[in-house]
Length: 276
Image (cartoon, rainbow, N blue to C red):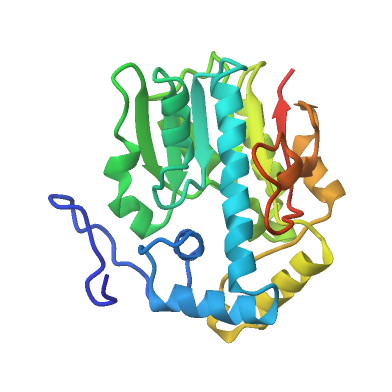
């Protein structure tokens, strides 16, 4: 793809202009996953950050580990736990491993609402609105901080009298403490009924991940891009009032692992909590 002419699906509205002046989280993750829906500003930021911290290939493997945890958690909920509704907050650019795809491939009658506020994600919203015949899918272009609006629009697809899995993957570490991400999560938890779940992962406070957060602050090309590492205790606060299912709050490598051990350690805390 070229910088001057970012792709848009045929027949869609041109929509808002894509910001090419600063890196955007959805495009950064796309680059780290080996995708093509990113721009030089995103690639430059990733290089500056990873050169100062863990290196590009290690970062890519850690992002891969994050997606694998997401897949395991969603398959468990749509399978063994019998959940049929998902609200994915910060869904990112569509991929074969996002919530929408994994949930409906596990149980075709799942209903999924994906949420993001990135213009490239918006350009591919038609993919996030495609559904299996027995299920339903929608996309909301919006900031998850605006929970009242998000929840109101999601109610057109999801039944808030039945359990819903609310998913926060690769998103909460973009919120500094003064934005109170714990209160943001709480608003969504309060809106869903008993028997609902929260799937959550966060950049941890290991030595290398703290170094990664410091690299973001120091990298000139990453201006405006926030990455806050938090301790396991701070991540645990997101699950207050919820019942953590086994194995509890652990690193993403240790949440119900499948297959061979990971090539690199990814110490991000994660968990799946059930609302009693």
